[in-house]
Amino acid sequence: MPLGPRYSRFWKGHPCKRVSTESSPCTSAYYYCYFGHPQDEAAPFLRWIITQLSRRAEVVSTLRHDLFRRGGEPSIPELLDALEQILQVFSCVYIVIDAVDESNPRDELLEVIHTLVTDPKLPNIKILVSSREYIDIERVMEKISVSVPMSNKLVEQDIRLHVRSTLRSNIKFQCWPNDLLIDVENAVSTQAKGMFRWAFCQLHELQRLKGERHVVSKALERLPKDLDETYDRVLLRIPQEDWQFVSHAF
Image (cartoon, rainbow, N blue to C red; front, top):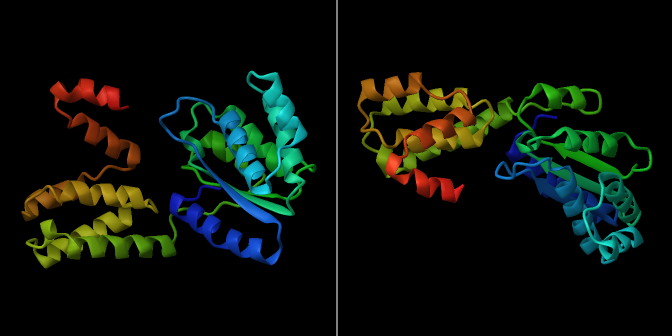
């Protein structure tokens, strides 16, 4: 279940494409739960997936047509019925739901995911869910999914390669002592816990420093524990006179 964004993209871009060519008609769809939308993503997710599958199939289900003619907001059960109908066009459908933890609230979304996985009327749908670890998500997923942690050796190796490449190629790090660069590489790579974005953000912040050992060492000791803390620090550093502009941007 908890799978990093990078892995969800790999799954969507490679195995799905291969299966589609071997056993047509087979397709895939991707949905990202954007943190800027303070809503339960259940209905938006279903509407998006139904729309994408309808375009791939080049057909409009009778249920979807009826919902359109009626107007208003369709209910979750109605959307699930419409999805069931359009799924009949395909032999298999792979769906990626990225960043489920960003849905706020998410009770309905988790219920929809559970339905998609367990409903015998939807045998041809396969789902990959990515999320950070939250107890409510784990409770729903643990009985219906196989968990693949973000933090594993392959991801850690990729992150280390990215960190090393950045430290060697970024002109702002070129005057830093080599042993200090090694310290940065080790600290950022090991504390990333599978999060490429976290590693990227730390390098972006560290490049602001002059490369003095005691300053960099102190910064490495105070690295934020996760992305939320990283973003909090960035926002708190914004000058007060710019707060109004930032509020409009978000």
